[in-house]
Amino acid sequence: MKQTALLAIGIFLAGAEAHAQEGGGIATFGGGTGSGTIMCRACTHAGNMGGSTMSAQFAEQVSEHVRVGAAADWWWHERDTWERGVWDVTVAVFYYPGTLRRGFFVGGGPTYSLILATVTDSTALQRHGWGLATEMGYDLSPSSSVSLTPFLRYSYAWVGDIYYPVGSGIPFARGWKHEVLSLGLGVTLHIRR
Image 1 (cartoon, rainbow, N blue to C red):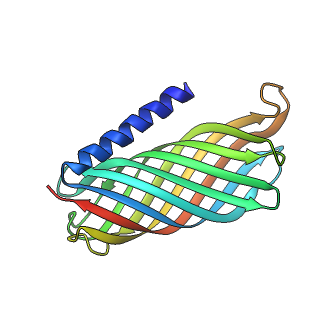
Image 2: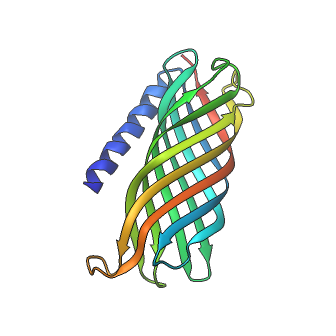
């Protein structure tokens, strides 16, 4: 099921990018800093921690105020010998209150979230779940072909119980949930009709 979901997401992203190239679309690539909070029972290294983020976003204009597309975001935190990471893929709707030619937008949608948690130097766990993501930003020059886009993004997802070794019934974490708040700057490519 996981492979099917990832394949569907990959096809959607490729289609969104190809459709955007026909006109009226955007592609944004960004990075920044983020604060991640891991909430779980019977687990180590939970709580709030800083980290770094990267993102890619593709969207197509569907009306004067709306773009529809997909976003992929990655947050990670490293310390000594352990690492925590969150990958989110979101199907998103972006709303521009003052039309697409003005810069401000808000957006969001359902997200498929994959967590990575190191157990030892050579062992890592992966688990996936569902959640929601939202963001707001401002395109500093929406009428140009390339512009800068500062953004603030929030995501929340629930993963559930994680066992280690896998299938052993020994809990590594129970009731895993996480949220990520990130602040970043993107470079946006505007593809005109």
